[in-house]
Image (cartoon, rainbow, N blue to C red; front, side, top):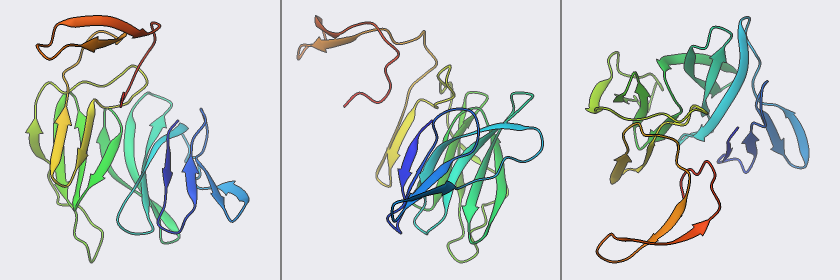
Length: 173
């Protein structure tokens, strides 16, 4: 699940259980390799280098954020949902806490401890953390029952008409 355009113009994407795939110059190849005990790689995200991050899901359900690039892959931290590089910070949710790790631009390494920047941050059933951000703004949402409808709201915030059928919506724009 998920996809990301990398700086070299290639597309990294996931379609379900298994590895992430890469499309570059019309050719499709594996972008990641499942390690022993892993069942899936999900949610690729760009960095400001040619690397990308993603979440590896293990057969016991644990999730690990990894970085791929420079001819290898390495684990960064455990997580409950997807992760994102926002400026020089890796952000992700672990057990309802939104954490930020500063990344050293020269070495690519992360600070040894995550700084809590949000509490009671939710993760969808599919493993998508309820967060979105840019270098200037970070939004998060608490855990909630599954979203089931898209509604118009008037300027006072009162509910209007339903826009779409019931479903599992994420990042409506």
